[in-house]
Amino acid sequence: MTPVELSRTVLRAVRRAVDVGELSVSVPASVAVTPPGPGGCGDYATNIALRLAGPAGRPAPEVAEILRPHIAGAPGVADVAVTGPGFLNITLGGGAFAALVEEVLEQGTRYGYGDTLAGQVVELRVPYDTRAEVVADTLVRIVATQGGRAEVRHAEPVNLRPVPAPEDPSPLGPDAARWALLHPAPHDRPRISADHLVQRESNPLFRVRYAHARTRALRRNAATLGFAGAPHGVRLPNGSGAFAEAVAHEGGSPTPWAAGPRTPGGTGAFPAALPTPPHQDEADLLAALAEYPHALCVAARHRAPDRLARHLVVTADALLGFQHVVLPLGDEKPSAAHRARLALAEAAGTVLAGGLSLLGISAPEYL
Image 1 (cartoon, rainbow, N blue to C red):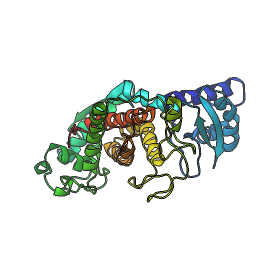
Image 2: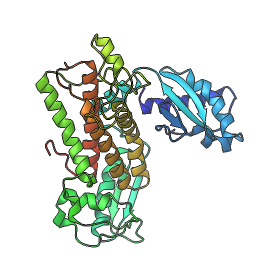
Image 3: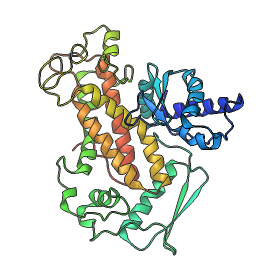
Image 4: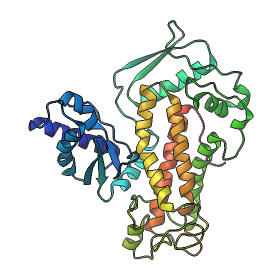
């Protein structure tokens, strides 16, 4: 079950509760499902009960308990728990994250597109200013991803006026200049400096573009080893280790981190060459992919391309932590686990390429 399908599942649960008289509310047009926050559990969480508490005239935890069995009975849902002030935390059944990766790979750079602004015309009135014009140009593409149409005009009263750049960014080159203007929030003054050009970890633009190039390199290296990506087996670990089921299914041996304690630094079963346990990087990357449609929607609705830029940084950082476990190590033979990891890396590359394209920035194959 993908995030979009889960959102529809939650909406159907609300509709059923209304139809049987358990709730007296108007069914909302959409529901947001996101990775759980602090104190949450499961694979996804939704605040729909908090949204409906006021209209229903009931406490949010009570609304959540009404909705919980309707969601729990849906195909693909393994468990539903109520936490905090009334958040519904949803655990999906097997294969859910393979479906997410498949959706990304099937939709390509159009993954995350929606219809929340369908039929709407967004008028952007901007001053004669470089940053305002770059932001508006980017918003035309981002708004289109949600079914809307943005029209840019130089007219008063201005309704899009980000803080101007202190100097001309064009000497940075087209990619770095656009990033320098788009990555800061509209109320922050952009920093125009050569730091945007350095190829080091401190430069978020470099990390994003490098992460994309790494996904392409992983695919090329896998082809050299004679295998390609296949989403089967992609799942968030639950104590048995990332992709352990896929390896067992194929009849191979568990990967080094799939059995025994996972301790960094060379002790236990976790290889010393990896800086963090691979299952956490896998979880972070899956969460970033699942959150991308929401980030894109927020960027369009709030006229904030910086939201998209910052989410690309999150995705890139997760990929760079995960990349070390994609290919076989030493004498390992390619297994279903490796094919699943490669598919996940390719999905991340797809999201990074699509997001950079919306920002008007190139996504290099080599870097």
